[in-house]
Amino acid sequence: MQPNFLSRTRPLVLAALTVAIAGALIAPHAAHASAFQLKENSAKALGRAFAGSTTAGDDASAIVNNPAAMTLLKGNVFQADITGINFSTKFHGTGTDAQGRPLTGGNGGDAGTTIPVPAIYFATQFADKWHAGVGFTAPFGFKTEYDSNWVGRYNGVKSDFKSLDATLSLSYDVTDDFSLGVSAIAQKTSAELTSAINFNSVGLGLIQQAAASGQIPAAQARALATTWATVVPPGSDGTARIKGDDWAYGWQLGGLWKLTANDRIALNYRSKIDHTLEGTANYTVPVNVSAVLSNPAIGSLLGSGQAPFTHTTGTAGFTTPAVATASFWHQDVKFGLGMDLSWTKWDSFKELRVNYGNPSQPASVEVYNWRNSWFASVGGEYYVNDKLTLRAGVAIDSTPTYDDTRSPRVPDSTRQWISFGVGYKASEKFELNAGFAHIFVNSAHIGGAKSATNDLLVGENDDKGNLLSFSAKYAF
Picture 1 (cartoon, rainbow, N blue to C red):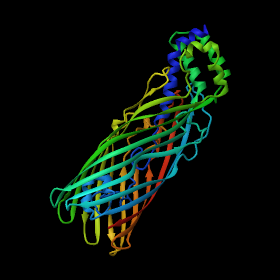
Picture 2 (picture 1 turned 45 degrees about the horizontal axis):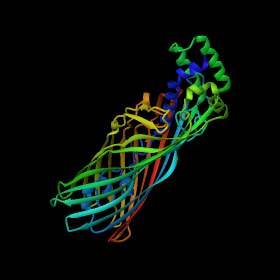
Picture 3 (picture 1 turned 60 degrees about the horizontal axis):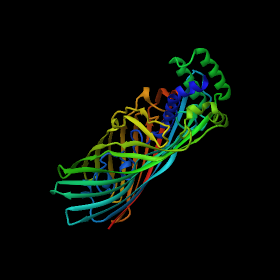
């Protein structure tokens, strides 16, 4: 009866396979704004915790943050920024497989990393009231890697995700006190993600489902489970490695109002950008599992098409979210004071649906149901003299994730920022800036993250981060 059992349970095998792949395809890890959003595109703004990010003025990052604020730039401006992100995340907890047995493996070590995030800008003023600019930035990204044999390896091991933007902006001074700006954004998003596959749980789970549905008698199920556990014992792990990328396009619209000679306010809206990531899925399968899959008795399971757990192509829809920002700045002779409030529409990330080039693999769906998040900051500058400026700021950044649905791939929680910065004007044309921020992160509780093979992970991640940024600006 074994061939008939395998034939009847083929849809269950394919479902387990496709969910396992989906679990590896999308894995956003905490970066330095909510989820995997990156705000680090200006050393000057970092020193104020991004308070007054588009209203403080004299910063070419306005090209990508609010094109209307380019009106505060005079002449031609070239600016280059580089930010080093040092992020640490350490898991503490336990794991069990679908049968309730403890999973082997450690806590994964420090899954964080240190990465550079560059930004380059050029802005020009023409015809008195017009400004144009181009910027190259990385608005979304993360990179993290747990130990390959850690207890949560079935949820994820390596995650490397990034979005790179090329932004072309144009602004017009409608009046002396009001400017409008618009941007066109070309975005390339790419991902490389790996996870382990629990082949022991795949087989045992299928047998249990077949017995529960009455497809096979309980006695036969027990015998099959014993045989499977002998041939494919716990620890018979494979790996899935996913790579994909896509180009897509978006826009933004901004306005800047000079309320008084000393006060400015700006509003900006950046659109969501819809991607269809296209790439490949590659697997390693242990010898004992390969032997089982190649057994003639399982021919009815595999059918005449491409076998499961073989290299294939895949596509997944993914959206980088819309962002709305309000910025305020008060300018005095010896100091400036600003505030920022940003809203990120993460609730657009409802689910991940994956389609495969292998016709034996149906589409799979994973549900995320994130919520929208907020970033609020207050900061300012003190002008020691005509050359030296000191900066400081604080911020709070909410998370879009929930305790009961949080994944170790996304050990994100609400963050608190404290920032410091310094600026030095070497000449009328050349300026240097540096900024530093330390990020305190609430414990990211994981209430019971399930892998594709129903392995359960319970615990928490302890996160922290440091940012160090430098910039050089030349005006001519």
